[in-house]
Image (cartoon, rainbow, N blue to C red):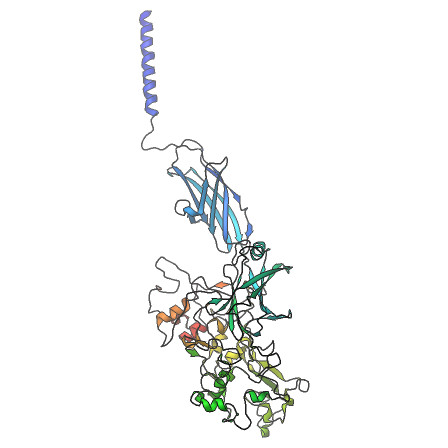
Length: 627
C-alpha cells in the first residue's frame, strides 16, 4: 500500500513539474510576435456636424478619443479629404492638439481648405502599427461657401452731405470725407468695435500721396441688413493740419487688405483715385461757359495777339517756341496743369513715358497721328465740370438723318460730330438742342475702371454694324482696327482668359464688382504716364505692395513676358473676386501646359497668343488652354 502511494505521489509531482515548466515557457513573449493588451482605440468627431455649411476656409475639427493600451509607444492621428491624406500629427505637428490629461481625451485639427464640398476622415492608430486592427476612423462632410466682406460703393462725402459715387473724382474740397460701404453676410461686430475703440482705434482707409500716408480719423455707421447683407459705411476724415493734405493734388485710396470680418474672412480690396480742387471759387471755372456772354475765352485765347490759327499761346507761345513744337494744346494745358499755376497737376506727368501718339482727325478729315501728349485727344477744354463728367472727357453728338443730301456732302444718314462737324451744314448750335432734335444722341467717352465698369459688349453708337465696349470707349476710339493697335478686336473675344463673367444667378461677382466682360485698360496701364513702356503700371492689383514691374525700353524677351504675367498670376493678386494663378504639378515648379518656370526661353505668347501668337494678343486676350 505504501509503495502504491509513493508511485502516485511521484506521478503527481512529475505532472506538476511539467505543468510549471510549460507555464513558464508560455509566460514570456516571443521576440517575433506582438500581442496587444487592451481594447483598440476609438475616435469621435464632435464639431463640426456633418453637412454643415461654413463661410470660412479656416476649418477647425475636434472630438474625443479613447485608448487603454499601456504598451503603445504613441498615437498617430491622420486627416484625409476624399481618402487623400492631407495631414498627420507627426509630420504636421502645428495643425494638431492632442490632450491626454483630461477626463475626456480630446483632439483638435486646424487647417485651411478651399471652397466646396469636403469629405473628411480622421483616423487614430497606435504606434507601432504592427496590428492594423488597433485603429479607428470617423468621417464628416463639410461644405465651405465662403462669403468674404466686399465693397459695394466708393465715394466722397461733400460738406453739404451730398455724395460723389464712383472713382476718379476731381475738385474734391479739403473739407470732404472719403467714404466706402462694406457688406457681409453676417454682422461685422469686431470691425465696429475696432474702429470705435477709445484707445488705438483702427483705420481701414489709407489715403496715399506717393509713399506718404495722410493722417486722419475713421468712423463707422451701421446701415443694418439690406437685402440679406449687413452693410457698414466707413468714413475717413483727413487731418486738416497735415502738410500733405493740400489743394491741386491727386491721392490714391487703399482699403486695408488685412481687414477681416468676424469669421476672419479677408475683405476683397479695391483702390481708387481722387484729386482735390484748386482754391478758386465754384463759379470761377476756367473751362466751360462758352455759349454765354463771357470773357472766359480770354483766359486761353487772345483776339489780336495769338500766334496760331486758334489764337492760343500769345506770350506763352512766343516765350517757349521750342517747347511748343509739340502739340500746342498739350503744352498750353500744361502752362497751368504742371503745378505752377492754380490748377491740379496732372497725375504721373513727371514719368518717363506719357500717353504718346493718340489719333485725331486733321482739318482735312484724314485719319492721322498727332504729336505726342495731345490732351485734347481725350479731353474737351470747352466742357464745364459736372458730376457726370468730372474729368472733362471728350464728347460727341450722333444724329441719324431721314435722308441723305449728297449736294451738301451728306453721303451717309448717320453723322458723328467727331468726324463731321454739325455746323458744316447747320448755321448755328441749334442742332445740339435736345428739345428741338430729340433724336440727337450725346455721348461722353467713358474710361471706367474696376469699381464702375460693367464691360458689356454693345453696338457702336455711330455704326450699329460693329461692336465695341462702351465702358472703354475713350481708349477704344483710338485703339481699334481703323486707327491704331487693335485692342478692340481682342476685347471682343469672349473666350479670353481675361474675360470675366458674373456667376449664373448672381448680380455681381463675389467681390461686388459688376464686370461682365474684359478687364479694364486701367488694370495694366496708367493713363497719363509711367516709367514703363506702353504706360504699363509699376504695381498691379488693389493693394499696396513693394513688388513692382519694370521694363523701361527694348523689345519683349521671353523672360520679360513671363515676369509681366506672373506679377498677377502668382496666387495672391486678386481682381474681381479671383486670384490669378497657375497650378503647380510637381516639386520642380512645372505647371500645367508649361515647361519649368526657370526656362526663360518660353514665351507666354507661345501658347496664349491666340492666332497671332503675339504678346499683344496674349496680354489682352490670353487663350485658354484645355484642362
